[in-house]
Amino acid sequence: MSESPEEKKIATRLFLEEDLGAGAKIGLDHARAHFLRSVLRLGQGALLGVFNGRDGEWLARIEGMGKGWTSLELLEQRRPQTPEPDLWLAFAPIKRGRIDFLAEKAAEIGASRLLPVITRFTDVSRVNTDRLAANAREAAEQCERLTVPEVAEPIKLSQLADNWPSERRLILCAEFGPARPLAEVLGELGPAPGPLGVLTGPEGGFAASELDALTQLPFVTPVSLGPRILRADTAALAALACCQAICGDWRERPEFR
Amino acid sequence: MSESPEEKKIATRLFLEEDLGAGAKIGLDHARAHFLRSVLRLGQGALLGVFNGRDGEWLARIEGMGKGWTSLELLEQRRPQTPEPDLWLAFAPIKRGRIDFLAEKAAEIGASRLLPVITRFTDVSRVNTDRLAANAREAAEQCERLTVPEVAEPIKLSQLADNWPSERRLILCAEFGPARPLAEVLGELGPAPGPLGVLTGPEGGFAASELDALTQLPFVTPVSLGPRILRADTAALAALACCQAICGDWRERPEFR
Image (tube, rainbow over all chains, first blue to last red; front, side, top):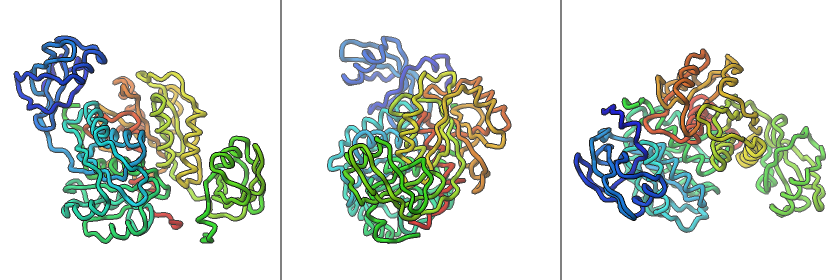
């Protein structure tokens, strides 16, 4: 792990699609180039962190920059790629503002995949998955994450149930009906839970028939989040945070901090 | 517990200051009267839930209503007052939008008191505690809570440390330095943790000197929230959710649901 004085000068982190390696030169797209030059006011020689979800985090220097273009030179790897919890969030989409916030927070907390799911009482008809992906990417860039969560296209709840991988335990946040306390269920899964998913409903809640059908599925465990009725976004974030704290990667302080 | 058909028709819940009891008649202030009549479009005879943090939740009927005034008649108690976790959130204030959201979520998750704390890197100079209290009250009304969190006036971190009640364990969310995993600390506190508090820093984090000084205090336990750098609001909500799930009132499904 490099502890060079340069480390402190890094202005920002960028997620890139390209392969990363020593000496590689990478041209940024117009939007990124504009962001570095006109928003962050960076110039030639400035240092960045870059990552692609595969090759760890690299130190990069702005090699050249003009109107609408920037080229980076990769210097050295700052952190190796490490395994991350395999934690999906399936959620009924909610109105703008709250859904943007949810994508940001889920990325910080460490969800690996965001799946919008249309349930009976979902009152949002269109989901801008490009905007959700952008929110998730920006949050990943800011929170020192080495990956960006994938954002899936919306599907119906019945499709989710039919196509859910049976080895992935699905934690169903159920606001009524039989359910065990969240922390009890997660405590039993323990520190190596395998692939996990969390499912949360819309502001109007799941229909009783939806909860009944989900609860029959062998891979579903309904959980209770306590005596208050949480908003959809609160429930999703709370459940993800508990997953990470009890079964996920919040159990250890990383070496680099 | 009443299971009358009236129960389903309740349009909203209101927090009131007045004492609640069978047959009591309560006049609403202008803002509340306007809200019921012009926003919710309720009329004479409509049913509400009301609570005051002391007398449980009561079924109330709109007895009379005119321009700018509404009077309620209390019918029967729907839920008795029950003890709630004694969980404070002390937090460095953050910018508008995010701080409103934080007050809402903290109320839903079940914090009993919100304390804005000015730290060295806090870049918000004024905190509108009236607005925070209104957000917390509205969230409490919507989430079926029987109390409303108190919102304290901002104080400096040194004042917080000097005046903190020594029997109240303070969970310090520390983004660097020695700290144990959050779930491990909360697991040791167990299901009857006594009075608790959570302390989170500003977007810029605590200063190293602040973390050092806090960590020396006998009532402080520094905790880690994992490998990513969480935003201030994310850290606060995640820590509160874990407190409630592991040591708080998320361990049981209430009888009324």
